Amino acid sequence: MESMYNAVAGVDVHQQKLTITTLVGNNSKKITRTTWECGTYTDDLVEAGKKIKSLGVTEVAMESTGVYWRPVYNIWSKMGIDNLQRTSIFYDFHPRFIFSLKLPIKNLGPAHKII
Image (cartoon, rainbow, N blue to C red; front, top):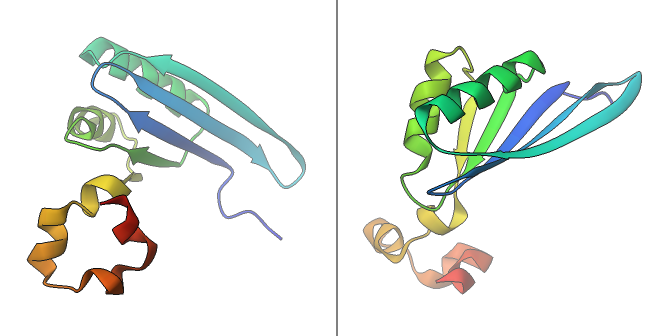
């Protein structure tokens, strides 16, 4: 099976730190995994963005349970890290979100178990 992306990153966003894991490789060589933590001040985010770009990362997925992803997105998108995806199961399935959709809880599958 051919890989879709050769360099990706996953970012776990917290209030005071980010945990970043990158996977870099291609079909002909071994995948290199790198994990590090950084702070959430602007200088820290800029340095992390530079490191991500230097590794050739093309796709970034961020996980955050609140609004802490916003500064990361704002800074990195201005740096040219364009393919930022935000995922957040716990945030998106907050009871207010579910009730605003007016869906029965049973139709949500396993997601209703986290409420």
